[in-house]
Every structure is written in structure tokens, then in C-alpha cells.
Image (tube, rainbow, N blue to C red; front, top):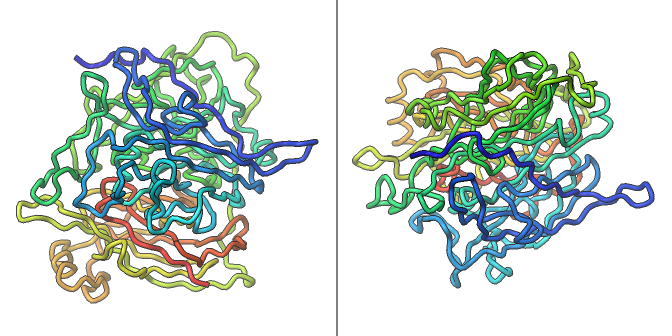
Amino acid sequence: ASLDMFVDELPQMPRLYGYSRREGLLLPGNLTIGMYEKKWKFHRDLPATTVFAFGTSAAAATVPGPTIEALQGVPTSVTWLNFLPRSHILPWDPTIPTAIPKHGGVPTVVHLHGGVHPPDSDGNAFAWFTSGFHETGPKWTRKTYAYPNVQHAGNLWYHDHTVGLTRVNLLAGLIGAYVIRDPSLEVELDLPSGPDFDQHLMVFDRSFTKDGSLYMNSTGDNPNIHPQWQPEYFGDAIIVNGKAWPYLKVQRRKYRFRIINPSNARYYKFSLTTGLSFIMVASDASYLPSPVITKSFLLAPSETADVIIDFSTTEAKEVMLKNGAPYPYPSGSSVDRLNGEVMKFVVLSGNPNPPDRSRVPPSLKVYSTTQKPTVKRYSLKLYIVLYEYESATGDPTHLYINGKRLTDPATETPKTGSTETWEVINLTEDNNPLHIHLATFHAIKGRQLLDLESFKSCMTEKNDAVACNVTGHAKGKSLKIPSYEKTWKNVVKMEPGYQTTIVVKFNLIENDAPYPFDATTEPNYVYHCHILDHEDNAMIRPLKLVA
Ligand code: C2O
């Protein structure tokens, strides 16, 4: 028997303010947020589940964690504390590169996804720490992280980033939203606002056992090599803000939803019933130049879609949010009755109260893309190849970028404040969301690789995209970049069998000014596939900014 759908009301996560006000002045905010083991009710009829949760206390901790509200230009510092027990609640795998503390404990380290911040606040995978800082990883330097919030306003989120444990730490619940607001821009745009009409939806998939525990297969696909590691985790229940298939009562008016996908590996192709459309206003942490009306959109792990839904344009009493993406995406099984449903909007009758005075302006925000003579840049053509290694039985044993490990010396060494062109070649069977820390980027074109097999075998032999003549192989169908993704993103989907060209800005903030922190110190940044099971084994590489 499966759980009844739409019986729990959608929760709004608690809000923490990353700033304060004194005598009319805005002051930096200092927050302390802990990670706790606790019980969490994912569904009315499911026994409470043991989770790892972020919060200001064990009692206040939630899954997802509190939403951090920051203001553009006002710094926020967060002291992240680990109160987790001696052992993990999920099966992890010591045969992949993993933080294994000598004295037990669950290592964690927090990364602000999409943030422009100094390297020692980036949450380096080796900067982990256990409960009470009893033990720290080799790159640990500080307890309190600095988030300067100097980038343009937008949607970020925070999550664990520990080497080899990211997939299980997020699966256990270590995720939360972070938003940088620019109040004058919000007034100017006049989109739906305030906590009732501007809400976060964090959508992720989980499986449970009968006793309510999180279920993760504890036998790897290829147990002789990796006893537990699986290449992709998929759960059959869809969770929004910590409840399985919740409902939300809405008025007949416009709402803004900032939809974040913190799932390990699941892509969502969202659509609405009753003929309603989404009006997309932003993607990841950047606005679109103008609103994009679409009946559906695809959201990869770690991407954010910021959409308006106008419930005044339907007569229906109920509108369902649906998912149509196969898993793994795009080569896997089609969605079923369970993971094809996300949540239900119950549309209240009568006129909205207060009346809806928000609007969707015809143009939103354009970020500068042209070079400014004052900023020194260079452009480099880099080939980034994502591919998987297989055992004799054809199961993936590990996935690498450019055939290299995280601990191999950095080969991507952009100058701080520069723009680069990367050619990203995806030789795996599935779409892979590429995330680059500190950077914003967008795809400009893509070409299907012809003769994939010969290119793959050349890469296995020579591990050199240029020598294997990638230009000779990338000739087929071209990639269409949806208009709802045409802005400066922090995650871009890489089609399997394609070479995708991305333009990447490093360490540039609003109006392409470089932020004056030293981004070249150690420990430095990383870039990786944001399918967490891939990232852990080990589709992740260092990114070293140089002066
Ligand atoms: Cu959202 Cu390096 O991660």
C-alpha cells in the first residue's frame, strides 16, 4: 500500500534573517546554525523518520532547513555547527574517496550554492568537521563562514559538501534555501511578494521503509568494487518542503514560487493541469531578460526555477503540479503514478484578499555581457570531458572529469575576473548538470557528437579531447537552448552525446565588476556534476583561481 496523496499541508520553512536593523541602519547579520539528528514527519501516515536537519536548535531544525534571508550588499556570517551522532543513518561507502574520521562522527561542511564568497568560506570538500569540531578535515580553516552578498539578488541554497558523503548527507536532510534580496529591485519589478505570495518549494524524492526510515539500497550495483555506491539514487515519494505530495491552499491570484531541486539525481519536467502555464522570471540566481511563458520546464538536480503562477486564469478548484521526466534522465524509466505527482494547489473561491496588485513586467533584468576595458580578461578554449569507467559487466565503477581525480592538480586555473569558453563533452548516457563554484555561465551552443564509440575509445586510450579530434566528432544535430535558461546560471544541463559550449564568468559581480576578495588563496574552489552520486565518485575537480 502506498501513502495517500495531498493529505499534508505544504509547510513554509522558518526564516532566519542574515542582517539586522538598528536605528534605521542595516547591519551585518551573524547566524549560528546547527546540524542535528532528529525525527521528522514526512507524511501523516508514515512513522516519523530519523533525519539530519539544519536549525538554530534541535527543536527548531527542519527538513529542508530554515530559509536564510539576506540583503544585497549586507554581509551575513554563519557559524555552522555539527551536533550529529557517531554514525551515519544511511549506508555510505568507504571504497570511494571519502572523509573517514578516525574517531567516528559524521563529517559535514556547508557550501552556499551559487554564492560569490572567499575560498575559505566555500565549504571545500576537505574542510569537513565532526561534532564539536572534534576532528577536522585536512583543508579545514574556520568555524564561521563569510557571505558578502555582493552579487546580484537571486536564489541560492545551502547544503553539505563533504568529500564522498555529499549524496548521503543531503539525502539525510542537510539542505536549505538562501535568498539575496534587493528591495528596490523588488519594488521596481512588482512581482508577487511577501511570505504568503512569494514562497520557496524545495522538491526532492525519497523512499521509506515501513517503519518510516529513509531507504537507500545498501548494496552497490557493482558490489565487488563498491559494496554500497550506486550511480544514481531515486526515491518513489515526491517531497515538497519536507512533506510527501502536499497541498497548498491558494487564492485566485498570482503567486511567485522559487522552485529548487535538491534531489540526488532526479530531473523534473514540471507541468500544471487545467491548462495553466508557468511564467518563468529567473533561472538559478539570475533574472531572465523578460518573462518566459511555458507549459512545462525541465529542472535538473541543483537548478532553481523562479516562476509566477496566475491562479486567476483558471476556473478550476484544483490544480496539480506534475512531473513527467524519465529517470535517469533521459534514458530511464517513465514516471509512474507516484513520482509523476508533485503537489496539489487548492484554489479558494472568491476574490483575493487583499486584492492582487502585483504584475509581471514585460522586461525584468539584463546583466552586462560585454567586455569592459577596465577588466582584464582572456578567453581560453577548454575541453571538459565527462565520462564513466565501466567494469567488465558494463556497470559504472566511477565517473571522472577529464580522467582525473579531485586530488590531482588543478587543470582549470582561470584568472580572477575573467571570462572563459569551455567546451563540455558528455560521454555518459545521461544528462549531467554541471555546476561551477563562484562562476556564472550559460550555454551558447551544442553539437551532437558523431561516432561516439570511436571518440570514447580514443579518450579511454589517450585521455586528450584535442588529440582525439573532438571537432571532427561534434557535427550532428545542434542543441536548442530553451529561452527560460538564457541567463547567467550556476548549473547548466549537459546533454548526453553532445559537446556544449559554455561562456563562464569567474568572480564577477553586478555590472561585471570583480569582487575585491582574494579568490586565489587556498583552499580553492571546485566544479562538478551535481548528480550527487556522480559527484561523490568522483565527477568533481578543483578550480583554482589565479591572480
Ligand atoms: Cu550545490 Cu558544489 O554544489
